[in-house]
Image (cartoon, rainbow, N blue to C red; front, side):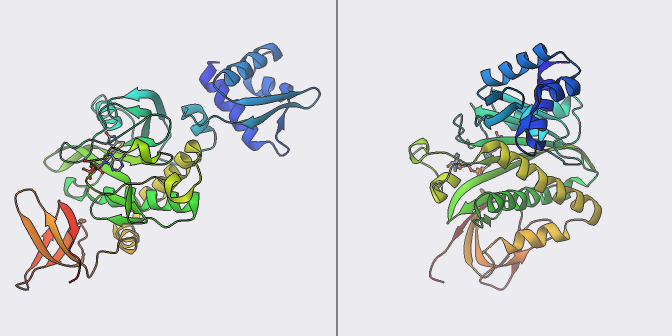
Length: 330
Ligand code: BT5
């Protein structure tokens, strides 16, 4: 048995142990290897930063886990149906979206999740960049092959947004808000960004990549000074560090539940959940659509995820992409 698979089994046994102890005999039985081979695997885990106590006649006990993102550990506690059946982790990549996109082109499986500890060229929308220091945050992309029409794909951004808000709420009890189209705000500051990319033919999706970046434990000094929008991390808002592996599992569970509902029942419930997390309806905004700026009052969101604006002349304009600025005092 290879080491990653053995480590996954041992970490799962620790999670399932009632009193925290797992006997060497049980591990050796589950792995089908000798007691000395078990000891070697335990040493391997210690080497990765896991603190494991060995007590004669009781066995091994996991005292502390390092805050690393390792596929075996993420897998060990995961019970999703579609998303995360395969998880790949790397220490550094240019961009997890690029990595997932390349996997998509090579025939990668639906539901594959890729995670990096650091991105050297993290991507935002419209060729902008995403600050991605190591050891503190989450940079994750999911490869999906949904049988939906290409023009429905933007709905998946709303699905990611709801999943991120739910995972943040479960982690720290704070309700994040969504800002159309792809920002997640905590106390009015950007805590996460989403970037979905797609490969399609005229009326068929080959695959979609859901890119999710969440600032979990980033410190104030790690943010560059020239951000477009005030930014924050969960740690900065709550004073508590987030164990990243736990957060990933929660996020994948929410994504999986929402995705299954979406595939079975359509976008209705996802869009309704998203609209509840948005406080834009009724606000006066200006939307920078690159080629033009459109001003108006937000009256709702279309099923395709468009922002519906009522302009000064009474005209209703659906906007599919752009950057929103709330115009105060109207
Ligand atoms: C986004 O773009 O918000 C989408 C970000 C998506 C990042 C994820 S990480 C995993 C996956 N792999 C990737 O390569 N990307 C995805 P946009 O709305 O264009 O916002 C980008 C702007 O936010 C930048 O121009 C900065 O001003 C600001 N920014 C950059 N890094 C930030 C950070 N870590 N936190 C908050 N704001 C940031």
